[in-house]
Length: 93
Length: 514
Image (cartoon, rainbow over all chains, first blue to last red; front, side, top):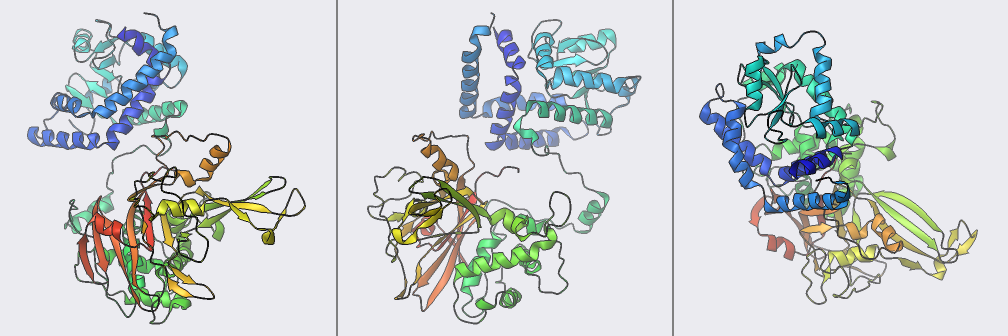
């Protein structure tokens, strides 16, 4: 079911629009800046020459997931639900 | 992680690699067209486990998609010795030999171009302006930075930008306007980034003097500044304000904006890159920040034809109750009375009340008939003012000084004003939707265009004959300071909102690109 939903979202360009909406919301509420600051800390710890993107991903993913405000989660969920409600007829399970 | 790319991409950069890479970006990373999106939706799944999440990557050497998280792409890289892959979510290039994402200049260039193209096709809002890129210093800038190693750190409670002003003899009217202007964020940014290119030969450019003033205010000096040069220039360019008597701060504001606007000629460039010499279509910083458009609709009572004009404005002058002009006392229970969260003690007037009165339809009596274009005769009509275009900084002038033929007095009625103001009900567009029968204005949460925040208040204490001006200005998000000539003291939000209010400065909360 997840795959079908994803397919529909991608096809209609809704996925990209949702991505942009999410990007804007997370910047507005300061999440992006918090994550940036955390990244800098990780880089300081590991050393600029040795740190890899993978290191950063591992370090900041849990914190990033936890720090997303509920209001943002609610809004996106609402958008996705509304979109699916509109297009359920075409969805093949 | 090296900023210079890696040597392993050289194996990839052969034959028609640029075009191949573009195709990969267009089809699988940033799909701009419906067709590519359909293809992406169908084919972008892991060839090993079928998942579409898990940081899917595409091999750059062959048609293979694999999860990064589950290491499926890593397996493929090892087996086939294809050591480059691209992240389908963000377009980053991963090198399996270096075991990290690499940043190759040529590839980055292609990525940027393809992303822009896709965004344009999709009409995504973020492509209107330039996408944010980090700042790379030039050689000259590096030189300057090395020669000037002293850095100023702005913390949340630092007081840089605050400075007292010596009173040079009843010049408090000028001092409080200077305080308001030096704390207007966009104006501050304009001057601190040195954007004024002076074209005046003499030393009498007011914009240059403002620039100097900003340097003084943000220098970190805590002693009061003596603005004698500014005063002299104002006397030179606005003769009616010269002299040592007390002047009206509002008049000074308008005169100052006018002179600054005139002296900004060197900074206005229109679309063709030529210097704009039309005073009505100026694009100087003063116009960009302070100029709004006021729409005046005159409706003929006979044929209901509407004649519309739009005039530019720098401030909105509002009549107050108790003046000799008739004021409609709007009942506290009226709609929108708590729209802006103002304290509405029974009977007290709010800024919103004044704005509602300002934008109400006014019946022009039989002694003021207007010639109607469609009726071709003089008819009675109604006139209504609304905001066509809001400026970035809105200045409200409460008309406390009455200079009618009979009396000269100061109206001290308390008018409460809010910290945050929504101008939507007073817009020309709102009026149009009301007229089209859409009475219930659905509160559009996403439309932040008309929301304003208070950042400066100028107050007058005393009488018409002898009085004193002071101002409150806002630093950072919610720190207020009282500026009484040379004395700056910390103030509370309550102090600000309880004050009488003469000039109120509001700043747009959200700034959009043009």
